[in-house]
Image (cartoon, rainbow, N blue to C red):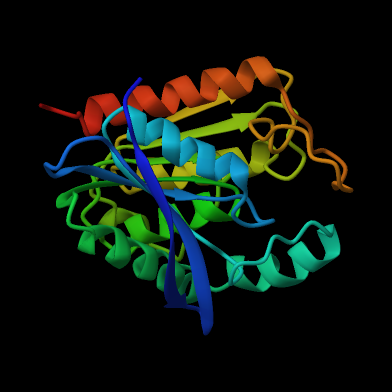
Length: 241
C-alpha cells in the first residue's frame, strides 16, 4: 500500500486559528493539490479520511477547518455559526483563500494545479473561490447548490460538478434550478448529479449526535458520489508520474 504522511496544520482565518489536516503522497516530487471543505459541523475524521484517500491516489490534500478547531455537533450552534457565514461571500472567500494559500505554499504541492472539493458549507466556500476568479482546475460540491452575487459566476474558470440528494429538503428543486440557471447563464462547464432517494448530507456516515430533519446517510450513493469526485479529478487534474 502506498505510504502517505499526514499532519495537522495551523493557520489564521476568519479571526480564528484554524487547524487543518494535510495529507501528502509518497515520494518527493510535486503533485497536484486538492482542497477539501467540510460540512457545516466542521472538520471531522470523515474529511481527514478523504484527504488520506486522495493522498493515496497521488494528490496533496488539505482538509480545511471552519470553526477554529471546533466541531459543532449541536445543530443550533452549527446554524448560528454557518448561516451568517453562508450569507457573507467575502467571509467565505477569506476562509477559502487562507486554506488555499497554505496548500499552495506546501513544497509538495504544484501551486498551478489545484482543485477544490467541498461538502455543505465547505462546498459553498469552494464555489465562492471559483466566483472570485481563482485559478482552479475543478470544483466539486455535494449538498452545496448555493448561488452567488449576480454575474460573479462568470469568473469561474473550471468545470463544476455538483451532487445532491433528490429528497434533500435543504437543497430542494427550486434551489437546484437557481444554481443550474446561474451556472448556465455564466457559461460554466457544469454537471449536476441527483442521487435518487437521498437526503441532505447523504455522503456523511451516521453520527451519534442530534441531526436536523432531512439529514441521513445513504451508503450506496455516498460511495457513488465519491467515485464521481475522483473521476472529476482524474479528468481535470490528473496525477502524472
